[in-house]
Length: 447
Ligand code: PLP
Image (cartoon, rainbow, N blue to C red; front, side, top):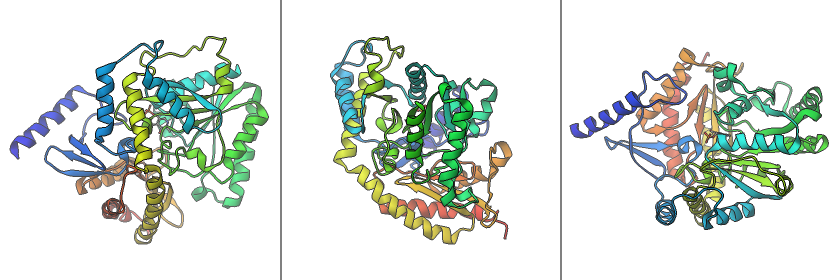
């Protein structure tokens, strides 16, 4: 056991001494040193098991360690590990065709990228090129990535940490969410659509290239679109000659119980951004799906997009193998079914824990919003919290880790987004740990 502890210690020290950690102070890190990962579990060097209740960063939809993907990757690697994007491979064509079949409407052409942010950057660039206009409208409570354009497009407080570096020509708009909208849900849709139309007029439709929205809200707080909202946004886009771009990086590939989050709303975008669940982290990858109408502009014009690793054959092979697994293992159906079970179980937790203000979920993309007071809805963690304000969330995350869970905790939100393979027994196991950790939040509730 001492040997294992020493080995773990060395690994952690090397990581801390020689690598940088995202979104955090570099001092005081206590990361899980993962030795193996299988299904919904991570295992550390001491043999401790952690339930991965947020599928890594909501990307490990098919679960960890699926050998079918590993085999497809190895096979492709042995055949052709890389070709320039101007050459073609069988896997690239097969994947393009498969995605065109999966995507609704005339979203038939794929531009393959490296991750979510690089897909967003290319979507913004293409929308501007196609329309000849420059402004991009996005929602305050959203996240689209951490590169310059994607970070500026993001509206949530992570953008403010690099406020001075924001890119020009992004306009944010507010879309209130039901839990914190005091004028009744029936007025929410009307208010949201009317205020968006006013902003379009203030900024001038002549200047607006695109409206960019998550297909289903993710790490900003899993906010639900009011019924009819996305359809109304589509209608505004059509009325004013604006492109509609959906970011399905987190909500895509079964996460919400359908292939894509926007499919709950009977609407089709002009550009569709994907990453995460496309390869489930077996290899980094992303894709921008482009409608025939937009792609046709570049039949006789140069398409000024390019990446050395665009359509990387090994990533294409990983994606093809991953897509097969969603279908053969009925994972999207399982996400929808387990989502309903999760919702029912959370109702029981809500009755037990005064700190749970709200639960928002679609399929297996959900989060608990914690409050200090259920009546006043005072948040447990203030908006735009950082530093000491986050102590309580860090304590909850630390407790969960101690109990044997990894999940994403940010501000006063605990995210629940397990792999789509999850079973009822695994959900029960996870919720028991969350219930235990919530005692920390309950102790802060004002009675
Ligand atoms: N868009 C959404 C909705 C996301 O949730 C994320 C990441 O969490 C991104 C874009 C950025 O993706 P990546 O981290 O792969 O650049």
